[in-house]
Length: 460
Image (cartoon, one colour):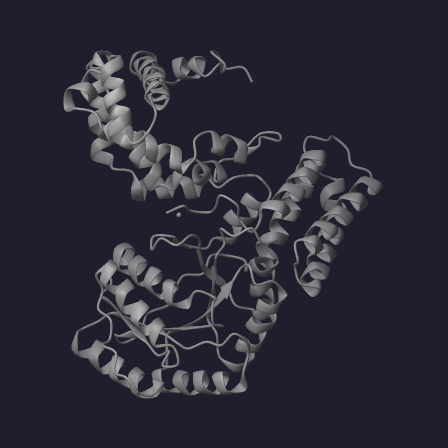
């Protein structure tokens, strides 16, 4: 999920606009026809400003208007909530409906062919996808580059393959793409490979020659999946390219890249609709972990400011070290203190899940909470600085933070390349965490809530 989705993501502005519309309607006991028409008009304006393709906007707005002005809202006990549900449902529909998994049920090696324009991120995506399939599914994966026009891309794929520990077809200069593809399939069969990922050539703009080459490669390799890799920041040009590739090839799905960029979100909300292909994965950031399966209903919830708690729970299940968590729980239960070694483990777990911004983005936020401002107070760099400070301490200092006096603080600051004030802030944060953990061990969640200034009782 990696500096996962996203410190500034493609849906930021659209999400702010639609969340504002939702907040104005949420909780209202009655909605007039004028209120509803205003809300529909605001939705239309927000989508157009987000650079969503006009036909997609028309279709979504027409559906929202038809349902909102019909009996569905009029008879509802909570009309504001019902309108938001309608908007959520229609966003899910244009994002492709239900989640779509890869279909690799064929005689190995199952071939995945990645296509798209140059610069969309195909090569990095090929490596990310290989890592995900190997780690998540335990598949034996092999990579091969067919981009003979860009030797640097072929070399890049080899280097990325080495990083993630999967085999990559050896480069043979002056070979034709079709020859390389045939050799890759033969080698994958001999190596008992489950999945072969082919990284194809691209162009900076659409050319008939490229589409003809890809068509011939498709007929030769008979891929189980043909995935169009699309740059989320490329605007409507990317939507037109997606449509052209879809006309030339039997695409089975889309992968959106650079979802962490500060674009307007139009590609993400248009590509699936115009190609009639589901979005299967989204990629954000440069790290090879930054690729995740796409869930339309969860993305719609995030766009409307409703969070993605289920996604957060799933990610925690994959990335949180359960053994360490259980050891900490046992330690606290026995009354032993929460020391700086424990704090470092918690910080590292948070970094592994993408930092504060990645967590906040998946949590439903009440009202108009500025999640970016909250994230800035403890961004990924701040977490890494704190880990560095703890790393500059002696084992004894980590176990007994109270032993850290002025001279020790100066030594720790110098050893980590930071200031004494940073050491003081870290120690203050540790003291607060220690108190919180002590309350948790003694009284459970209610006392923890009291520590945050939350309700002690069951009232709302």
